[in-house]
Amino acid sequence: MSSALITAPSLLDPLEEILGKLEVAGVRATIEIKDLNPPGCYLAPPDLEFRFRQGDYTATYTLLVVAPNTSRRQQYAAMAELLAVVNGALGYRSPSARPVDVPTNDGTAVLLGYELSWSERVRSTNNQGDPA
Image: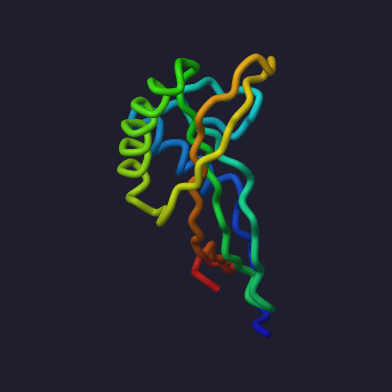
């Protein structure tokens, strides 16, 4: 094992990068579920898979894309457009989208949502800023 100081990769930096790409594309996005305002997206904390003694990990991101609170027919139309914008903004990272029902905060309606997920390697750096 190297004596170089290993710095753990940030959990927040990759999330902010994803949110930034969505915002540039004009999509409302948040990492706070209470702040989800459809049409928009909620980026959940990533699942992490650590590599033995490497100091880095594979992060699996889950993005919940939620249609506006309208009729179901209008939700499908809005969702098609929203998914196209989100996928394009993220460089088509997610290979699939899984439909999910999303209750509103007050429980009065169920919104159409799609869950996108993808995995990426997040690397640690040594004390010189070089990949470990």
